[in-house]
Length: 213
Ligand code: CO
Image 1 (tube, rainbow, N blue to C red):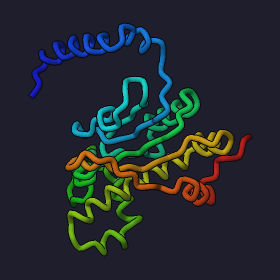
Image 2: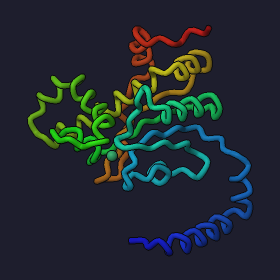
Image 3: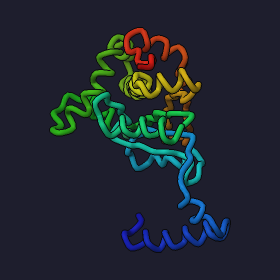
Image 4: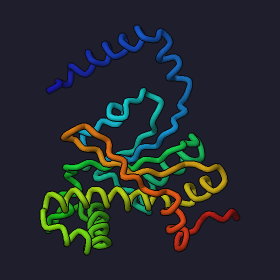
């Protein structure tokens, strides 16, 4: 385990390492960001965004919360999505869940979890929407894994429901929205291959915000 004091030693070493590769590393970094990716993932400490994607500082705009939720009335995530699209012009928006997600596990249990109730209720809503499929899975571990995947899909749909995604995609051809699951046991990123065009068409039947005023 890393001690609190150790962090500052690590930081010094990190600075030296980056400067050894590129003398102007931090000067360049301070000039601004131009990431192509917005990543919305779980806060779980084992899911290290930049490391698993193999990207450098400046390459991915990141938002994390418990169980990678995109709630329609969460001003935080909605601001992130709008900023990423309108100001950073990201080309890809990724919702990334992970197997073994404690948030999803908690939502599967019949327990009062206090302030977490309204947050985790969003996952219970996903369960309710896909109850038939999930209840047909006898093995609890498999059902848990499937709920994690379905949660990613539903949160990706919530991203697609936004006016920012619909309008910008129709005029510029991006951003594309993706759903991933990170498998902690193997380190693999699994692309759920959400058919963005198909989902967008489907979503727009009810949530069409694509028309300009
Ligand atoms: Co999690």
